[in-house]
Length: 384
Image 1 (spheres, helix red, strand yellow):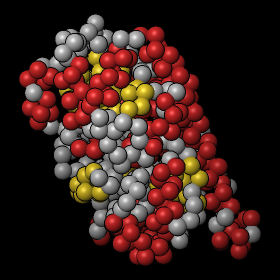
Image 2 (cartoon, helix red, strand yellow):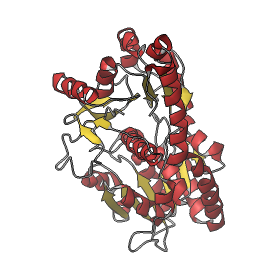
Image 3 (tube, helix red, strand yellow):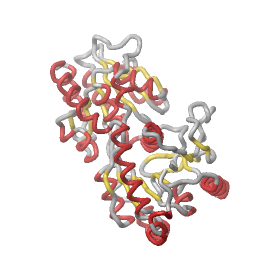
Image 4 (tube, helix red, strand yellow):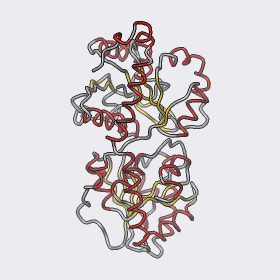
């Protein structure tokens, strides 16, 4: 499996790759991952890398899909990918985001085995993809089977790259999140709103949440905001203003165990993203933890939250709607409990063992459709 983004940086694609790898290994399969490790802001890139990961260089932060992501490219990355594939007798190569100018595209170009590609990209208008469509097409034709993590990702794939893809969503470690215990000092009597994500990134919607909090604290003097993720904490507190800043606790980036504990500590998780989301993994993580969710009414979020049956949806970019929804939930423990129960039931469909089995079906289809196997007969590809 190949991840295009550095595993030392937070992100849904990185979490998906590692979660799927563990899920497949849990089913008894041999899984190796090639990925960038480290980057501009990483001091100890190998600290938390699993043993099944082969580093392919340090990521360089590049603007992509409305974000800044750590990519790796160039002759050194190509040589490492070539050596990695030469040293393993893979049945299937699984690349993630192969259209990104990074490691997955390099591995795809070098592939000589059946290839499965997963598409996460969800920006409905992409000048980069439109411009590169003709150049990418010959390489994309090497893909044997395709997966999209959401209907929007599938739509983008069909529009820009042609072909179709089966929809298999992001997974979540349900047992880890459901068993989490709150952080010391939580829950708090005055109520706590949570935010998980890259809070300095405009499309994640932190300014909208801060505006909503300015309204809420007028009647909720003890309300707290617990923030988990990457970003400039000082800049966040400055943007919040004194009245809101003293109610904010910034944990910064944490491992999955810390994230699960943070979700167990808050009364409501707020996900005020403005766009560019293909799934919203933090939604399913919160649901697995039994944490009620208030999120922007984006297409991807609407599907995850079952059209509002498993969470509250508000117009993206509206502080007034967001503050009203948060106010209502904080005042209504019975509704929070009902949403938590609905979320737990829905999160079960994204448990990694369930998702991994669906991906395995695609692997079997890819191996069966391998042109060399069709040409040489059933014995052309080993069954391990």
